[in-house]
Image (cartoon, rainbow, N blue to C red; front, top):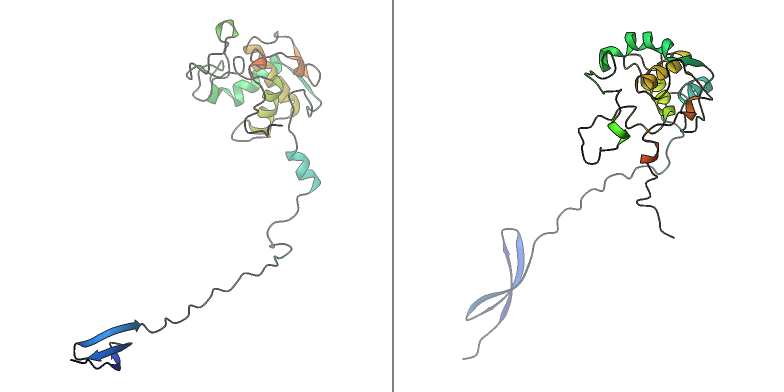
Length: 210
């Protein structure tokens, strides 16, 4: 028996297709959904940025100088001035003892005073060992830099340079690093050898190998 094929266009539910029609029924050949509407493209931002955003103003030389006060391990950046532990004791009592304790050991904040017997360095094995100025800090100049920049916490930067020198002298004296009558200044402070000075080395991890 010979089968007759007829092409017929069929539209069902918005879909159109071409079917072969014969004595065995319609055989769909293809179906195609209506094309989706083109999505609108977001506007591209301008590649040209404004010269300024109209926020703030340039810092003045005086403002920059007030912040550019870092002190290096070798004493570079130390300001003129001087102080002894007798000068720093009343400053500590008035501005520091409430946070660090009467003798620097009581807290509640960081313990500042104390030496590990034999000036050992147990911190990798015992994380509970207090990292005091006398046991952990590698440079005396860092004490000056930190105190002048960040202390006291309610008024950082409010201490005069002579007050900072006196306070640092007092803290070094409490840690048995200098005598009570030692005078701390630009010349003498970098010469104070801290027990942990040789415990720190440059970190070379991640540096390119040549």
